[in-house]
Length: 278
Image 1 (cartoon, rainbow, N blue to C red):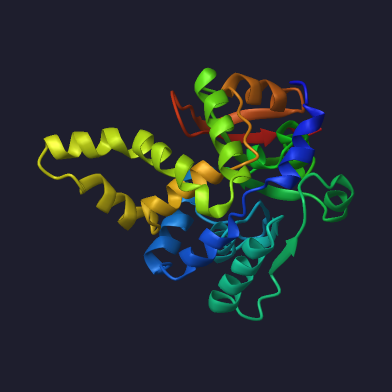
Image 2 (cartoon, rainbow, N blue to C red):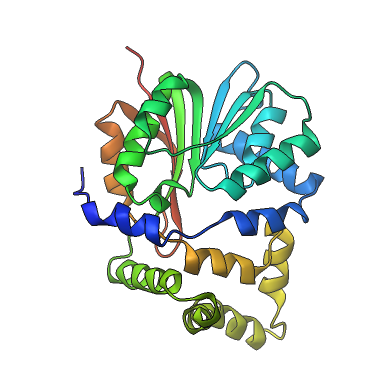
């Protein structure tokens, strides 16, 4: 298990990025097509047609979209997030699409709170997508989610890819962004935006359509690329892992990899593990 930096959690609490603001704005663009896309994503990820009779934990639920999708697929859903505005967003979503539904519970809490996690029981599916690397203690968070999976159950995770020196530089940029007052954050945001989108604009311009990818991205994701860049640049705490590290970590805890995607550069490696039965 990789070493834990004890100073990281303290620093993370002092300069943690609030994702909930962006999720609340995302709700205004959410429609039936995007909900269906989320349902399709879960079905394809788990290779199932239904979650009827299953308990589904959405750890770091964010907007609550995938909790809603799991509920519509028949699961009993438990949603957890540390960010109070994300919790508010998920509750607004439940009130809009599943009012008075006692099959979907939402709480504010931390995946690092082992005592609380022990109290919520075991789940058939534990889904934590692009979350654990923002906790300030990724490996402890990853261990904690493994304890929520029942024997024979499924664990779905997406973890930022370790790009070596590039990841070290991004962490420094993110830390600087969150330490700056709001009025000065443009000093980090715009150079990062040019780094992330500049090559795409150039490539599309050479093809005669400079906004081609930008428009498609907005349409498919339902959120402005500017907002997504803010999420990326502000996304701190920030930890990374190689796919081999994650796979070995879960293997040691009795899990087998059954599905996944490996990235070569920026972004998340995706993992679907199944916990062995006694």
